Image (tube, rainbow, N blue to C red; front, top):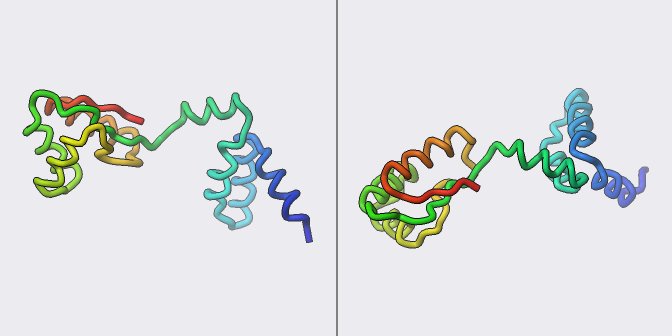
Length: 125
């Protein structure tokens, strides 16, 4: 049997491209390796890490400030999150807070536009 510690060190030293190749090979064999690639991804070289940051596909929509139209922002937060009035009001008054986490880029941009139209200051992270 292979030395597990050695195998672990080799996996952690993979670059993003090498991890992607490994993922493709494992999928050809019928093994889903998405979690392994996610773990190995950040351990890649400095240049590869910058490329991964540019390809970010999930964003957190952060309400930075409610602005002057707090009631409109509360209404929009309720529509987005499905929270009750008190919970949405607490979220808006407690800014900066995440309104939605792990949203796809298109959805995050849409939510940001809706909240900004309501009068809020919004950040995508």
